[in-house]
Amino acid sequence: MKVIDPCTLVLFGASGNLSRIKLMPGLFRLDQAGRLPEKMAILSVGRSQVSREDWLADIKSMLDAKFPKGYDQAVFKRFIERHHYHANPPDDPSSFTRLKETLSDEAIFPQNLAYFLSVRPSDFAAIVDQLASVGLTEEGKYWRRVVVEKPFGTDLKSAQELQSSITKHLKESQIYRIDHYLGKSALQNIMLQRFANTILEPLWNKDYIDHVQITNTEQLGVGERTQFYDATGALRDMIQSHVLQTLALTAMEQPASLNPDDIRAEKIKVLEAIRPIPVDELEKYAFRAQYSSGEIKGEKVPGYLEELGDDSSVVETYAALKLFIDNPRWEGVPFYIRTAKRLHEADTRIAIRFKKAPLQLGNGQDQNWLIIGIQPRECIKFEIQSKIPGLDIATRTIELDGANRQEGDETIDAYEALLLNLMEGDNSLYLHISEVEAQWRLVDPVIEAWAKDRKPVHQYPAGSSDPEASKVIFEHEDQFWRYSIALGGDKK
Ligand code: BG6
Image (tube, rainbow, N blue to C red):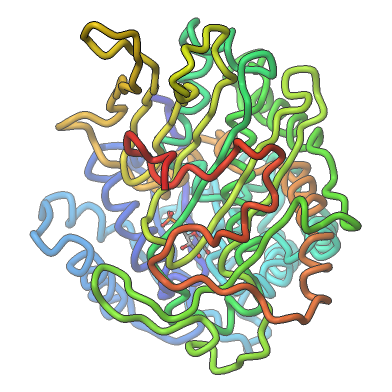
């Protein structure tokens, strides 16, 4: 366990959804696990005037909602004493000066400061400016760190603008850019499982691998977020961030060490080695679709355009890309990545199909798959060929199924891991600006081309599997989507 300096977490947007559902419960669980330093305060910053008493009651209501079966009252007592509230009404010019005054009370607030910006992305730069204007970002005896929630920009240009704005006041080492997938233990395990074993690495390259599929599908629709989603789309929402990060961990070279800088350096290298998608041949590389009405878990659900109330939208709820990584390890190996809302199942996985075996028995045996399940099942599975006992020579596919999560294992929310790393000063689970830039650089041309193309978008019924038409991106006729993690999931 790393030693954490006494510190104050300043939480902007503390009454918002993320804070209620993830941050406050996450901090509570860290306290319960004895992972918060004894001297640590949490200062919530919100727009409205709220008394400390009311704020503490609100925090209790967040915990009650998250832990309906109850929670440890002794921990709660310790936890609640850490909390304070500061009102920062947007029309008050002195609010940041007052914030500084509040924070200067060293008896209450340890002077190492982490600011968590759980606010509208359009407010990120302004808050950093204001903090800097009152001297709250300067490091000296004490550290200052700023957490920027997703999304970091909406394209390369806006990401670079945000970057140049905040780096007027902050060094790269002070900036913690969130991709909450990196806080998931199953994602961290990709790298560990690859490099802590000797049997995988020799196979992990173009000599043995036919192609890789990285999938992240949900049964959920866009829900209440129609306006946000229609300005965003699946490529920006999921591929630019979570799916490309999953790809980076799958494809990166072994880092020199597990230091944050070494890990990020390898991720940057592989992201930058992805070949730009040729927009003049876009249909061979990218496919989009929207869900129409259908059924999820036996219930009828409306289509995207109905939910949005605008049938002219061409924004995708399904996006698939074919990518190539131009480095010696991956030369010529297609990476098919896809994400969708309202698909037949919610599943995040990496599925690697190996090349044909040298010995072909003539009964059309399947190729080997290696599958890493991220969620809901955390597992690693091999599908291999094995003789069917009997007089004839024939094979069938059997699976070796290893559970990465076993009964009794702890369940840690991604935000718990991220918050802990923030206080420890370990930014390996946060994005470096070069990763963010490489990710935008890759998806921007596709987003632009799709936005210009106003032809009606291909529809798939909610609850169905991938649209047939998505197959156009496959490089070879014998490549096809793997529909499920289960044995036989490569057959429709
Ligand atoms: C968010 C996206 O970043 O990730 C959402 O904005 C998506 O659209 C969510 O539903 C998925 O996260 P998780 O952790 O539930 O897989």
